[in-house]
Amino acid sequence: MVTETPATRPADPRFSSGPCAKAPIFSLDKLADAALGRSHRAALGKAKLKAAIETTREILGVPADYKIGIVPASDTGAVEMALWSMLGARGVEMLAWESFGAGWVSDVVKQLKLEARVHEAPYGEIVDFAGVDFSNDVVFTWNGTTSGVRVPNGDVIPADREGLTICDATSAAFAQDLPWDKLDVTTFSWQKVMGGEAAHGMLILSPRAVERLESYTPAWPLPKIFRMTKGGKLNAGIFEGATINTPSMLAVEDYLVALDWAKSIGGLSALMARADANAAVVAGFVDSREWIENLATDPATRSNTSVCLKFTDARIKDGAAFAKAVAKRLEAEGVAYDIGAYRDAPAGLRIWCGATVEAANLEALMPWIEWAFETEIAAQG
Image (tube, rainbow, N blue to C red; front, side, top):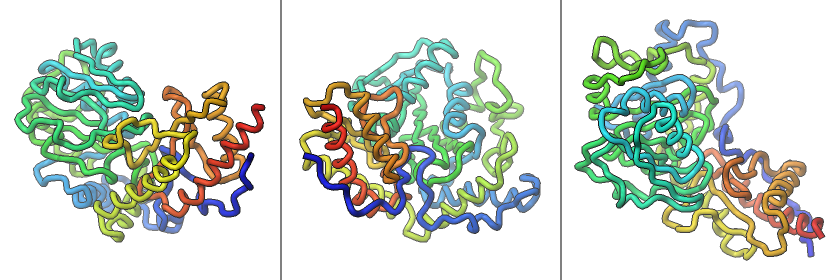
């Protein structure tokens, strides 16, 4: 029996996992102070870029001796800069439990042609860190955006490691507690937890990572946008706001607005609490239904941002078609946009629960998911 159409609709149906929902206070007039039509190298542009870097440091608690840079091509660009500039100095361990991690494996093995040790886990699970050799460089995602699985904590990384840890943290930064003493290279983009505009990435380097850049030259040529050194020394300007290529000052302003909002609500602890509360709304719904489950099998590794779900009802004839149909119904009703599972992931739903999403909107969405499920079950006969 199909439940009645829910009476309450989410005030904001944007639950996409990237670009993600804007901060609740966002409006276009918040961008009025953007340095448009001005050089990013002028005093005003430099000041705004520097503010983006230092406010990021303040909110995330990044150590003073770590370098933070704004780089081209979103999180992908930041990760690629690290891979191409630092790998090859010692052995490499590649960790993958979802599509983006698998992409980094492909780049290292097929493009850089390094003989890496590859550790893989299926969607919904995570690799066994006990089998990882941290005397090598280790590349991994902190939070699997397409699988909803995250590293539970920094205890799995030894403090006395010899290699570098290169961490894609794009769907974790600002929502999860990143242990800076265990991370040598950390990357993310503005478009995830902060709901900023796309195209720009953030690259955070520990002193150990800087030492690698200044002591090692890869065997392969580096494109201009990957080069972080000059004359064998770190190009400090990149980490002070002198970006490698021209940034969008409109996007910079948008990120600054989001950072100011984060500070106004209490900083990192408040951002994490919002994401946890959002994920709890979905978890409570899922735990009380027999026909839907969290893709992440272990509660300790479940993401609080990219929450991935799978339908388990035995009546479903074609899982992929069913999940797409449910997502399509929700979008047609204007209650949830872009929540289908990632194209390479198991069929299901992926609901963004990061800090810019309001818990009340998720609470309103849950009955609609049940309605869409029951309606589609009835429709398939």
